[in-house]
Length: 188
Image (cartoon, rainbow, N blue to C red; front, side, top):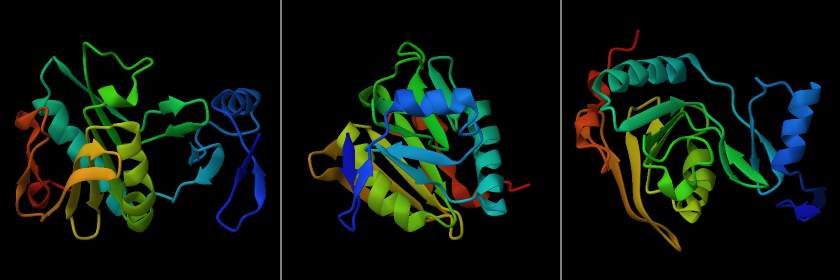
């Protein structure tokens, strides 16, 4: 199987099974930062300090507010199909759906924190997430603390898109009790 890159050159298309076998064999390391998108291994940007501070603050904040019916996992591998997986910073799902074999349409919210990858996340990942049917996706600009909110996926992307400044509350549609104001987080 092949895939075609932007410049038109043919590339070998990798499968999730092959990538998992390479990790098992030690060819790829479990901590290597990449995603598999349409059969192509896409290296991910290094995480900056600000990214990690925001992720840590959100993790502490949301963990305290979670209801038993809602689950949160960080940097998990979301297996979309045989040639695509992503590792979002946060993934929310309902406990009744479980994480193993969770279909994208059952993901309640994905949150990506972007310090050096804002353009990639907004222009490449968001259309993919919409195409998978993920209900709601947030991309947080780590520098400005502006949250780019995308809701209600459709055939041409998300139908509702808004930018929430750091001084305003934002709440996931599925769990209003998880509302957060980015500017009030304690970044320690």
